[in-house]
Amino acid sequence: MSLSALSIRPRILFNPTQRSTDFLVPGILAIITMFMTILLPSMAVVREKERGTIEILRAGPIRPVAFIVGKLLPYGLICILDLLMVIIVAHWCSGSGFKAASCCWSCSRFLSF
Image 1: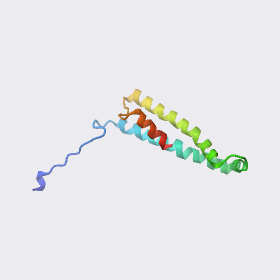
Image 2: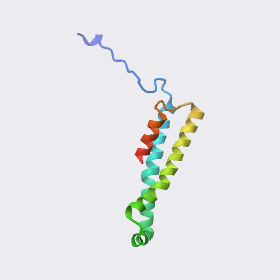
Image 3: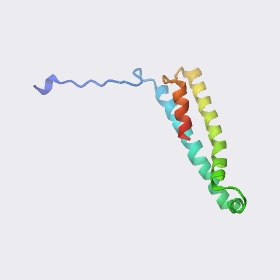
Image 4: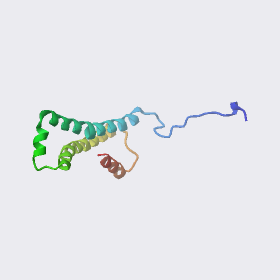
């Protein structure tokens, strides 16, 4: 078998039309999820430590788990609303959407928190 008989042809399985919005929307969703669920709550905890108010919370009857949940829950709810807005705007403006079942996608977003 000679090397000239072989031919390499790329096959695009995802987004065969190569529309950039089909690549950008999932990336934006990942960035929003990362910022809202990891970066912003951690900055809020660090801000409280810098201001000295975290010691007041430690002296009170609040448990550490309740403190962390109290910091994560508002950002998680805002993140869910942001994700829904990005999906709706992406569907209206560019017609890009998700091919997966919305129930499976919603469960995966919830588990990422």
